[in-house]
Length: 258
Image 1 (spheres, rainbow, N blue to C red):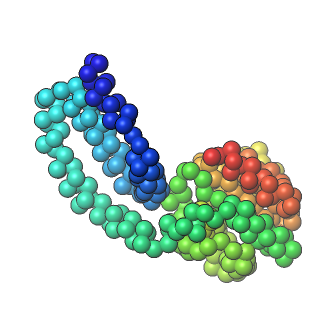
Image 2 (tube, rainbow, N blue to C red):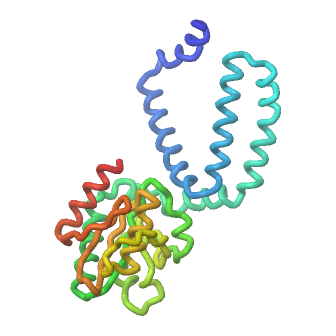
């Protein structure tokens, strides 16, 4: 057992600055690959491959010859099946990498700038007595919700949000999904809450905001044209909030999430 432990950990005792830098680069690459994969069915296949890799590693360490022989022979089959079955997803990932989903300006874009645009939008909506529903995606992917709307993939700005929620336009009646400083989609349909003890004044937008925050860790912002107020929904609870305090509240919930 001591020999096995030495075999596993001895390489880590000789790690230098160059190795740490390379590990950091690999961490960044794999982190953003996982972000791209988390909303696709490819992730389920990766989980299976990870389990298979773990068992193969254990079989090699503890010299389980029969299991090791079997696993080494089925690895090529798994890899070929992965490439064939998930060719569309892999192609889309390469397209996303080549496009704009991973951009340094997005990576380093401050949350302050994002929240400023949202607050500016909310205040303008209140002045014009226009309703809206904005959802900030959390760690739980909203791919199924995004597919119910129209994909936009634009940098967030108040002018575009105001245009989307202009009454009688095709997308004004759904929700806007925002992720990492981008307006991902608009006109999205959210699941409604099943709660029956809600205030009668709360309309469909409020119920949709509750529904999405009950099922995910997203944060939803509702502007009501009838009540002329702003509400914030988090963890299946909805609370009125002053527009001037909205940025502070969003920052607070973001810090708790991460």
